[in-house]
Image (cartoon, rainbow, N blue to C red; front, top):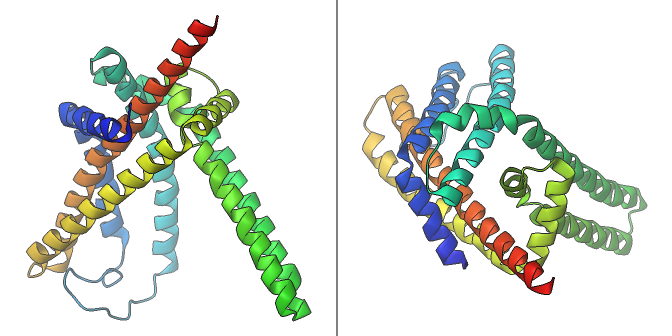
Amino acid sequence: MGMLEAIKKGFGVASKNLALVFVLFVFNLIWNIVNIAIMPAGIVPAPGAGAATAPAIPPEAALTTLAFSILFVLVSIFMQGGSLGVVRDYIKEGKMKLSQFASYGLKYYLRLLGLGFVIILFVLIIAVIAALIVAATAPLNNVIATVIASIVAIAIGLVGIYFVILLVMSPYTMVSDEIGVIEAMKRSMRVVKKSFWKILLLLILLVLIAIGIGVLLGVVTGLLTVALPHKIGQIIIGVVNSLFNGYFGIVMMASFMALYLALAGQEKTVAQKVF
């Protein structure tokens, strides 16, 4: 399966599973509406308004936003597990089992949470090492030492990015193959290494498509809401963003799932021929 075929499959799955898109739309919309409700007026400029000095966020609002953000992340893991399970079933069997959404969300919750924790921990370690290398040479006031340290830090960062890309298929291997966190990471690394440029270009294409559509929607929505009251404009923008995130989230998920299943199928066929 090629990149364009995978993207086409992603759009097809999203378009034929609007009930699943609606579930994600509602989830994102709740987050956006609550965000609008707890943010003090003036923090976010009205659509079409010029930049202005935003008032300081009160500590209570900051704590409320932080608490809700943490809750949102925790619930989003449940939503991710449910969506992955339903998308997998549809691609494998051609049937949407939306009734299984909640059970899939619970089934894969701890594994996805553990996977996210491992990846974030790895990124933090890489970032700290790179920062310490640069910081260690700063007091020397030596240009050559600083340049060398910066190059080493950049190299470490690039290595970190490479390993993160190797793990991009981990959620899909985990759900598709019903395996644990470590095994999912191992299989992701093996699959991505064999098709590195295909998977990387798929990711880049999807990001570019998302940015392109997002910018277009932002311009159109901004023009439509420029004359509306501030809060109403924010709500309309929140609705549009929620709909886009719900739909394109399934597009990306289905594209990667379809590509992984195709690559895994090829790997299995080759193994059978060998033996």
